[in-house]
Structure formats: C-alpha cells, structure tokens
Length: 328
Image (cartoon, rainbow, N blue to C red; front, side):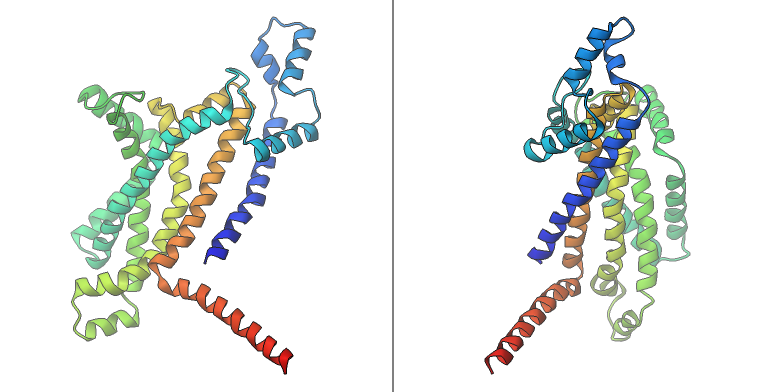
C-alpha cells in the first residue's frame, strides 16, 4: 500500500509539469503586454526595455519557461507580482488557507447532509421524503452559485442583516459563502447516494440478509451502505475540484481575500505570475485529493486493501519459487 501511494505521488510530478507548461504557454501567447499595463501610456522606449529586462520578459519563450520551471522545482519560487512586486508564493500561502476553509467545510457539509438525504430517499422510494429530497436536489443543481449568492445577500445581509455583505470580518463572514457553495454539492451527493443505494439494496446478498431475519436498519448499515459509498466517495473527491472552483466564484461575489479574488485580480491586470501560480496550486490540490480518495477506498471497502496484500504476497511466492528452481 505504501508503495502504491508513493508511486501515485511520483506520478504527480509529470502531471503538474504538464499543467505548468500548458498554463505558462497560454499566458505567454495571450494578447496584451504586461509591461504596457504596468507603465501605462506615458512611457519611453528606454523605460519599456528596462522594465522588460527587469521582469525577464525580454528573453525567448524557452528561456522564460526553463527559468520559471527551475525556480519552482528548486526554490518554490513562483515569481513576483508585476503590480505589487510581492512574491506570489507568499500571497498564495496566505490566501489558499481562506479558500481551503471554504472548500473543506463545504465538502463536510455536503457529505453530512447529502448522504443521509440520499439514504432516506432510497429506503423510502416514491414517498414524500423521496420526492422532496429529489426535487430539492434537482432545483439546487439547476441554479448556479452566481445567481444564488446575490439572492442570499439581499435576504440575509440587506433585509435581515444577519451576516456581513462582503469582506472577511470574522466567522460570520464564512456562513453565506459556504452555504451558497454547498448547495450544488449537496444536490450531487444526494442524487448519487440515492442511485447507488437503490442499486445496492436490490442485490442478492441484501435479499439473503433480509431473509435471515436481519432488520432493515441493520441491513442498510452493515451491508448496503459500505458498498453504496464507493461511487459516492468518487463523486465527493471529484467534486472537491468543483468546490474549489465554486469557492473562487463565491469569493469574488462576497469580496473574500482568497485564491479566487487573487486569481481574478491577476487576470484583470494581466499579472501572469499570479495566474500561473494560482492555477498550478489549484491543480496540485486537486491531484492530492485524488490520492486521498484512493486511500479512502481501502478504508471503506477492505477488499481493495486485500488486492494490494495479495499482489505483494503473490510476488513474494513467485520470487521464492524462482529461487527454489535456481537452487535445484
């Protein structure tokens, strides 16, 4: 198992390298000149050349790409912002904490709410509970966050004045962004849990457990739930990327100083180091989450863990057999 995890971690290197090259190439080929954006309209050719040399933009594409990759892998240096001259790594370390809080709490709420709703909807199929949760899931998934967020702001911030309208003034500032970001995930996990549970409870071993006299709750808890959670875990891990993306949108609407606002300002100001660093960091988080999901599989379903053990044992038996043949 440890070798498998190590192998997955090593595979992140070419993946992230590919993301880095693609993002850097896109920003390099994007129309517009960051030097002109920094200097404004009243600049001289001498100032332009000096600024381009200072930023390293006077070099060729391959030279810029190589220097950028080298600085990241050797010093974790993502460069400095063209506008503020602040190191991008410093800003990312501060802002990713805010975005991670929103995304992680959102995922926890999605699971704590979506999984029970899906279980109730599947075990009480065609009931009022089923129709209610299914309708809520369909409605929540159909309305995007950039539509729900202003509605919540008007109701809870302007009318009721329960929460701050924008900014990050304390714990209360996280409530509405997390609520807006969680609605889509709750809908997705509810629908997936319901579908997976309906498929699982119709299997033969579930009927056998019921025939042996086991109660309905015990059958669901001991037999159906673990098998039904496998696709739910997959969706939850995959939806973390969506939660990160949703957090970026929500941050801009609520003016929260997180990764989304930072990336938006970088795009607006053509600040390429900010754009590259933000995208690479987001890609790294998504790749790490995929590894966490794979490890979680073995916790929920022990059969997956035995595959690693049996494969390792099989390799040992093969080596012992070969050694025995050589000795004879």
